[in-house]
Length: 152
Image (cartoon, rainbow, N blue to C red):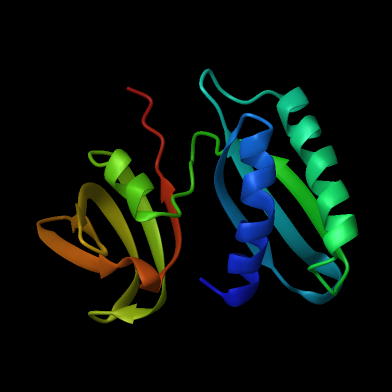
């Protein structure tokens, strides 16, 4: 996790929790005028648009005061949705048995993209079965991971 992302997590997660939500994860992509700060929130029973608005107003106030982002950016508060992103080792463990799509920051065993069954975790590695092969992917190499929704 980048130091900017760690700083934003430390600043914003307590605000989300104080409002009664779980801070599922934070994404920040700095791309000049198109920079995006996305905060995922969750709660028992699901997240409604009003929940996102409440959290967005509170986070905006904190960001205005603390000013941790030097560039222009867009703030988006969202539920994790059906293609739920996974950020922490605990989240990977919780969703063992689900189909996932994982993209790594750099190649591992010659590839960066993995899609298969999330088997669980072993220490700081995510275990995913692709076809008949199991991969132990170090969590710090994962750039992006999402649940693949099942409509059974």
